[in-house]
Length: 217
Image (tube, rainbow, N blue to C red; front, side):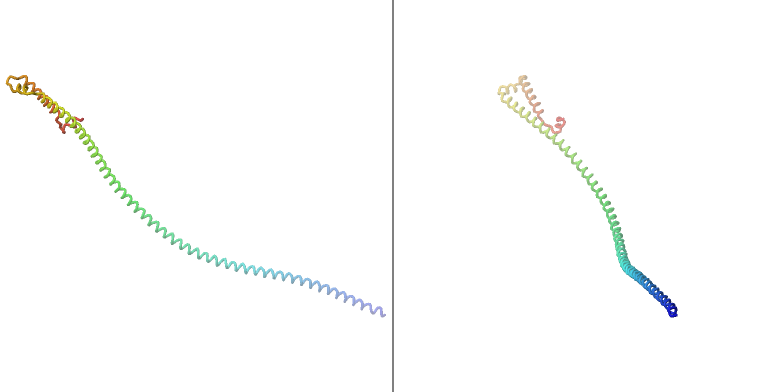
């Protein structure tokens, strides 16, 4: 009787012990799963924090880039305005230079015209001077020819005078008396012919300046 009464008790205790063991095993599995989920959640939280930090850094960098871009746009706008002002100034200077160049060309053209006119006048004067020089050279050559002819005539006259003196020295008193005699025709003719000869010789030694160029030609 006693053995039979303890058997259900043992069986119950065994079942209770098995349930406790099963519950303990189940609790350990649950704890392990919770720890795994906690690690996963922690990792996800860390990843989110890292992404948030990166996003904040990227935002800060983007804001810095935006500020730099705005500053660059402002600087480029100022430089563009300055460049436009310089371009307008250069256009004005170019227009002034073009007008000045046109005025200079017009003045140069006028000056060239004056120089050409002065050159033509000087050329005309030079031609006139050259013509006068040629005429003077011709006149000088004619004068030289006249001087040569005059020198030759003087030499001829000197020779005629010398011949007359020699002939005069040869005439004696008897010859003079013969010329004065009424019937001394031959002696008179002789002296007349001699006088005519010397007269012709003296006439040939006469120098005529008006006839000299023709004689030179």
